[in-house]
Amino acid sequence: MSYRTSTNTSTMHAERKKVEVLAAKKKISERAHEIQHERSTLELDLESAKPLLLEAQSARALVSREDLLYLGSQKSQTLLVRHVLDLVLIVLRHKVRPIEMQDARSYRDSFIFAIEVLSAPDCYERLQEVECNSMNGETAELLAPYFSLKDFNPQKLNSVSVQAANLAVWIQAMARYYDATSIIIPKMVLAYYIYRYIDMFQRMEYVPTHGVCSNVWSTFQRMQ
Image (cartoon, rainbow, N blue to C red):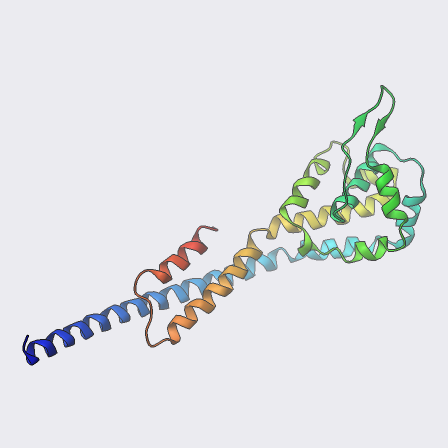
């Protein structure tokens, strides 16, 4: 191969590579714009869920140490209140015993566990440490059957126990906030890292041209 032919081949290869890099940079720039738009949308979605967060925080403020000590001092409770105490055990990641009928007039449940937890000196502090963001899919799944019970509503609970009603309102508010943000928050985290990833590509003199950016974008799209 002559020197001129070799030079021409190298020049053509360099030009082709330049075209590929420019095309890759253009695609990356488009992805950067799209992901930034998606981040803005997610931020608005999260902001729209803020009233639920404030509701949960306000409801938790209604739960006092005295309420917990009072509930923990009761040797018996109605079934409705016992359900609320199950919710407390669930959000504290404590074991819950399924209700077992022992005979026609008695049953065994988690009440003895709840009394132990509510009577503990640090129970109030432990509940204060429970945040909406600490809720996860498993916890929400365990709580859901209680919320669907026929008599499980604030009005009914207030007529039975104000202390239990305050706990129920708080835990329900946390669950609603989780339902509203369970997809938004993970997508926001992923969008942030993808944007950083794309930004890194934009700053590179050489950028990948074999679908790396598209693969990253596809990962985000699968979460839609």
